[in-house]
Amino acid sequence: MTRRALHARLVIAWAALLGGAARLAAADAPELPERAPPPLRALTTDRPDTTESPFTINAGHIQIETTLFGYARAPRNSGGDAAKAFEFATTNLRIGLTPAAELDVVVHPYGIVSPGGGAPRQAGVGAIDIRGKLNFWGNDGGKTAFALLPYVTIPIDRNNGVSPADAEYGVLVPLALDLGGRLGLGLNAGVNARRDDRASPYRVFGVATASLAVAWTARLGGYYEIAVEAGGNRPASTSLNTGVTWRARDNLQVDAGTQFGVSGDAATFAPFIGFSLRL
Image (cartoon, rainbow, N blue to C red):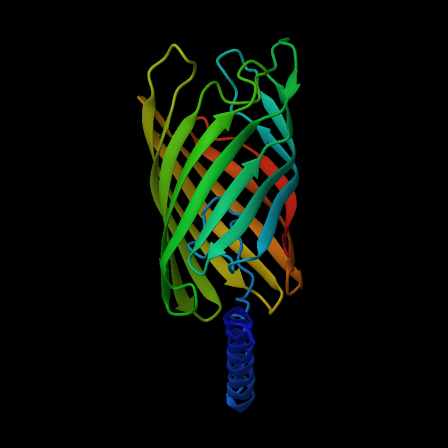
């Protein structure tokens, strides 16, 4: 037998020995239980009120929150005309990234604005909002929950009268309080920077909202909200909002509500209907 043949046989024998030892070790090793996925949290939504929740959705899940139809009537101007706006299928696509972080993509696919006073009606696609939400505590229980929510609004068509004139930037700080007795309080504070057109400077506005949620039954709920925006050398805009929610299934909620503007340029009347679906 040549030295090369002997070497080849030794290599084959050594490989067989290692393979056998590995099989024996695998057979004797205890089986490790598969890691169970984290439990699915109860459905929480960022609609129908304007107050954003501090809760994020589970990692690996998607939640669709849609305004099927919305109408808004603006305050009357000096000429007695009131602009009217309609929105269709405005959708917030929430994507769970980690146990405490999510990415939101809000799409405004189509809107109609009727300025009044004989001005032509305008229609078209709106904007896209890119948002991130980071929960600091309270996602999995507790009396309070807190998060940070920065966002940017990107205009799609600056000239159609529906999309904003330029990009907008902002950040919100959502806080939730469990008041007990089927009551919950949501609070938002934040700032928003925007401008009327690309030739104008950006103005900074402060935003504050408070929403009292009531669980009438295990599936039926409602909310009562106040929302205020001030700044930009303009009178403060204040609205009083209310609505109802119905938990049709564990992963499906339908809702309807309305906004009543009481000061500034807040819409005097703005009803809507929509739903939230977790996948």
